[in-house]
Length: 244
Image (cartoon, rainbow, N blue to C red; front, top):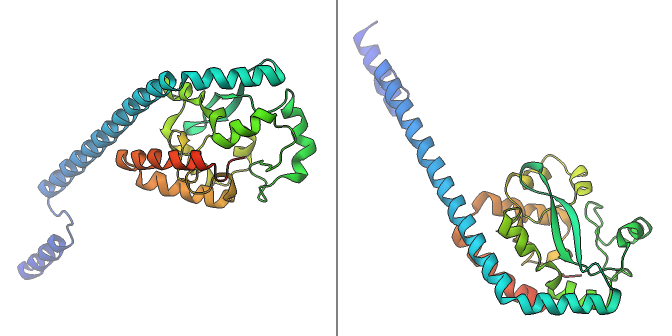
């Protein structure tokens, strides 16, 4: 090969960062391995810090909110008896099904009445099921829902690792069946107790906007962002916007 042509190609490949010799290829492989190990280490560190934060905050919340747990249980018992806790199947990380715990805010047998109420579903896209004036709600259940006290037992889900403090809300198995491939990307991270759409409108937001906010969180998640979302959740819960 003409020396000038060879030199020109080398210069062009160098500008384009394309390996030419075996040594160049080996160096590129080493760089790629280093980057992979570095990013895997960063990801593992992030997950470790996130999990530590989940454990510390959930334990603190369970201890500090224990009187509220007792009060909510007593209100449900007085109005409608046992059971106090409602357990429901939800879909978590990578499609794994787990059981979520809530204070029961509806009458016993509420699930059986859901089919009769489907036509009154407030969520027009028919993926999720929400009614603003759900007749199945207990009197105390309306307050529990409005104040999000019904979701306090989910701190135990956070403690055992089913949920994280922040992440997309875990859907029902029947909701996942109606998901598109784009919607299923929500299942690529551990679900959470609160998320972006929980502080930005909650049930008032259509499903497509909920998915959009979840994807925004997944693509830019960080410990700092989690802390900001948790802090913003407090006024969202106190004012009860979009909670029903």
